[in-house]
Length: 263
Image 1 (tube, helix red, strand yellow):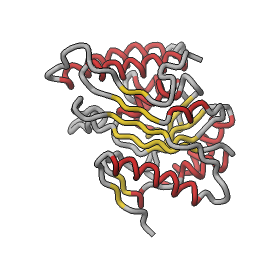
Image 2 (cartoon, rainbow, N blue to C red; image 1 turned 30 degrees about the horizontal axis):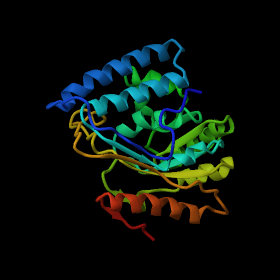
Image 3 (tube, rainbow, N blue to C red; image 1 turned 60 degrees about the horizontal axis):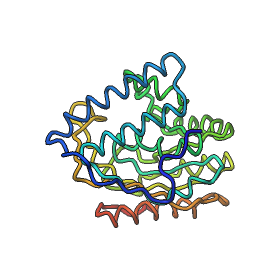
Image 4 (tube, rainbow, N blue to C red; image 1 turned 90 degrees about the horizontal axis):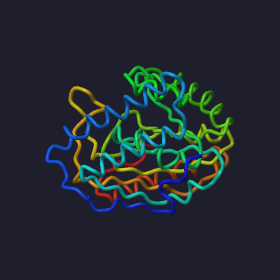
């Protein structure tokens, strides 16, 4: 494993040492393209490792910080639990997919549940496939659930932790009636714990023409908060509520809206 990059429970970005770009989006995406290009080439030839994934993820963090973006990450002590884990997070932008690896991968192997279309992206598709993700089509919920439970349980049995975004789409708010319990079901089947992750990543906006690559807004603080390790008991209803409460509570404290769980 690579040396842990962000030791301790909390990380806060240092003040920028250079004048931030006046055109952050135009400055960022060439850097991102270069990171993806190098990583994708290695992945295509089968030489892209977990350490490489950590380094390329960190390169994205440093590129954003170089443009004046600030990160605040809390609760990282829970990542020291050696057991494979299901991390259940709200989904706000493309940023979390690029950044979570450098937070978690140095401590334990990691993969994601991703939409299958991401695997066809130039460069990025090779990188994701090298991490053996659980791919879903987001067309038939029943088929997606079966795929996550079967393939996700295999990854966890092999010692690889899994990040799950239960929302059907990215959103700056949170409608808990659409925040399903797929992560809880996966953890229960695999006999592993869950950790809730609240995040605010709308500093990386949604694009009009390419949804995954929108405007970069360094003025919005980027936040990740890891919650407590939860062992799933019974049907997992209590743990699902704990996950929802943790994420909703943080989003509310960060000034974002949440809707209540539907009956």
